[in-house]
Image (tube, rainbow, N blue to C red; front, side):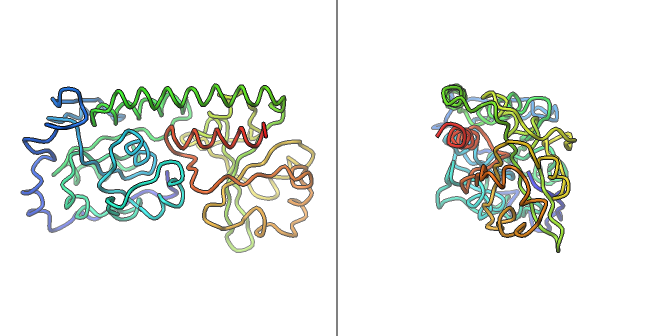
Length: 327
């Protein structure tokens, strides 16, 4: 997930790398791999493309943070990650990476040369990275996941996990990962029900300032955060329009006036240290008159919990729902 489409320049010095990396797998890749047999693996990805490997991938490059997290959660530490520093800031609390991981550039413009130089068996990207496919597939197979769906983000996440697991020979690990996630949903729902606080709606948002203007981005019921809230029986306070893909709304401080007299729990992310909902709105009459501000029902999400992530990030968010509602 990001705020801008990616662009890239086709590298001019791939020939030597292509010769070394061939088609992305070597003859003995997978001999000790994660699959039970180490034999060929195949999936149909989100774009309807058949992705086939001679053996489960052991060396993976992931260009979006959710897929980085999922791969590492399955026991496949990526060899390359786009915007490694950003991952550590926004995601790393749930699924840390080790020191072996190489940064391959930004998510907006990853380095094709850097990716090629890692000799990976598989590159994983999301559907809004499509412009990169042709260049990368000159030397390594590419798997495209969906990344988000306003139809059902939990089913979508399950499909993305299963695709990555199939191509890395980690299907048993995927089953265990999903079982843990479903158990966390059940435990969180039970905790909120026992606390008797679940009738109070929540509003999760992030925001930023441009000059004197503050933009607020509420996460609707169809976002991943919203899907988690629905799964544990909570009501999402944002009922406005969303973007059709990520489940994200858009408003400003004036638009927040709709919550002046609404009892709710406001949760926000401050991983970048921007303090937009504290320092950034200090003294604003509309903000300071909101019921949740006056009542102090405001909660800062722990740093490193990614709201567009995989099962482990989602479990961390569920833990925070339980903390907010049941502690």
